[in-house]
Image (cartoon, rainbow, N blue to C red):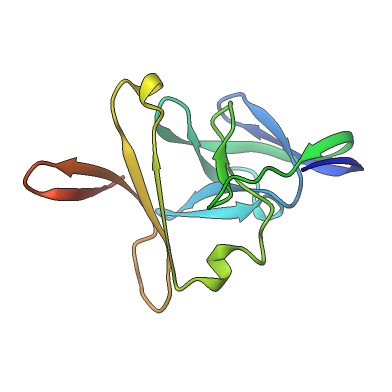
Length: 157
């Protein structure tokens, strides 16, 4: 959906030199003590580590976040079924569903994704157990491989 706004948004500058404008409704994939969680931008701060997908997954630090006045169009993209997507600059974004998203009502959420094979030149798959109610599970990312005779093999990143 396209909305015309005249309001404050967040300008996020990253340690790799890239930057982006985000509304307070959107979040980034934050890494903290080995855990990966989609965190609304208003709860992120300078030096937080976020994950980007540029030539494979890697982390960068937030150099600066500041509120700026923005007058123009914003877009609320819907990417079914998980509402996550990767921008051209590599940032992994969560759509504006904080507070009422799948993570808040499901007993378990497992996120699977794959690198763009044409860019990476080989198949790389990833898995995160984002939530498993009533368990003390590992919340970091795994590299997922399918090996002959073994099936699915997970390796902690």
